[in-house]
Length: 282
Image (cartoon, rainbow, N blue to C red; front, side, top):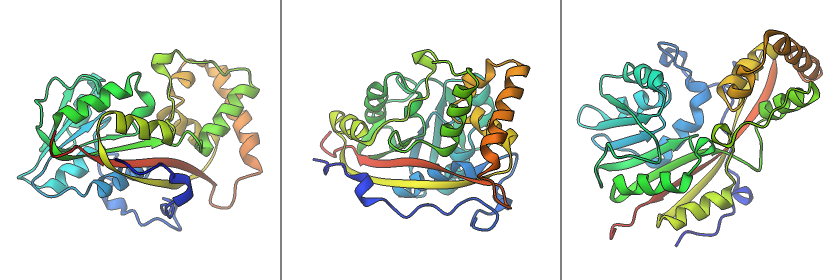
């Protein structure tokens, strides 16, 4: 059985910030608009899965395909890298990232495009906060894993909200623009205890945990709004008109003024990263 969950008592060393004075990220890797600094939790997740060249790997919810393309290169020509994504435009974009990255349209809760026991590893990078049925998604991921295969999950930490989320939430509240999105469109970070239960309920064993933080350098309120569109507030911000966006940006500028330094504002994002194994007797 998995050990009792106590991730906050064993907080791992934070990731180094993708800021100019601290980054170990090589800009040469960021081809074709790839934004790997903001995908760092995904790269940590891949390292935790200990993927080997030649393995068969599935990314559930591959988005624009940056991380999947990076994994495809690591797996080499004898490996298989597949991805599934519900949004057709993102499927097209992800498919162009790497010649050995096979991307299909589909949902995490319904992996019918793949047969049972067809992958050595499956991962969901920051997908759980967007799922209406996370237990069903885990059940499907377990089905397509071979016995002894590994699963990896990353999620925003419900106990430690991202700094940018707190700032945007407060600014929307102060301007009277905060709306509760429909449940199907909600971005809801998952707590560690619930994630532990989901893994155990789906008979996944040898659960290992990390709590990691990434520090971003944000130049101004406009950049913060742009990041909010990508991370958790896209639906709400898309529903605002031009005048409301101007009000919101001014509110953020006032909030950021007292916190900005010479290199901009340093904001933290906090993640839980979990890996587990499908029992070999399954």
